[in-house]
Length: 236
Image (cartoon, rainbow, N blue to C red):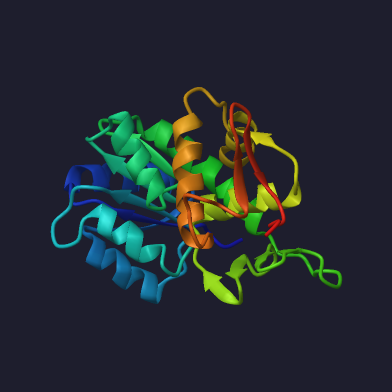
């Protein structure tokens, strides 16, 4: 059975050495990079299942690297940072990260988060032969293809992060039904809601910026004040 490959990107040698031991013991194949530019080079040569990406690095930091990776790839990204305020976490998640872990951290907790992200990623992206147009959810100009993992608006391909796609797919599968922020968070993040409301709002805002002509007057992803969000066919 092929080992799952983790790309660790961190310029702190001691952290790299420590995590190399832990992940190797857990049966993972670990690739090591020390800045964002090296990470991008690895991605051109290797199939990577998950990326652990430090924020503060020389040459290309984790924020720039994450945004560049998300232009083409959708594997899970877990960001590491000593900057761990709520706003730091929300910003990291909004640019495409799937999880955010503050430093210092417990290596066993990080491994648990890696396993959780990989389970969800493989389950969500597992491909099965579609029946006819099964997996294609169309709403006039908006098309959500859950097999190809693509979104198109008026024929134009829209690049969404994995979390953004998961939210849009969830709303598309429940067309016209209002889903609360807690329902969205529990389903997409697969963990207790707690203070996840801001996280959901940031991701919905990003989705609207990408699929709506006027994000401030959305036609597709609509807010039902005090309840949550719904995706509905445009009425005009």
